[in-house]
Image (cartoon, rainbow, N blue to C red; front, side, top):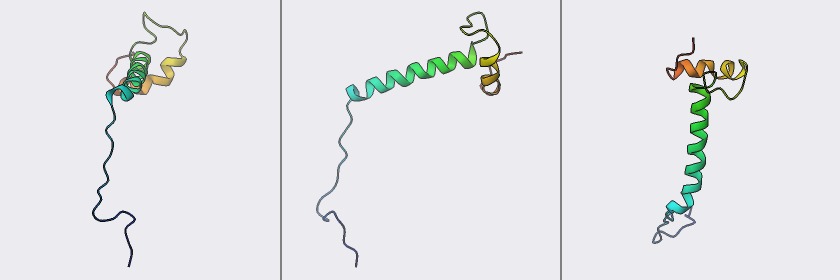
Length: 71
């Protein structure tokens, strides 16, 4: 019948990932989430970085879904 590629006496282990290896990715995704939160929650207000209605129209439904008022 079928034979296993790994002998029955060996067990495979996954090497742990260090915090030093995860830190740059955590910072990157944290900054990305803050930027997305800004555009969904605060853009088109007193701190608008981009003029016009384009950003508002792109994030309008997400803004309501997350509970941010815009009208």
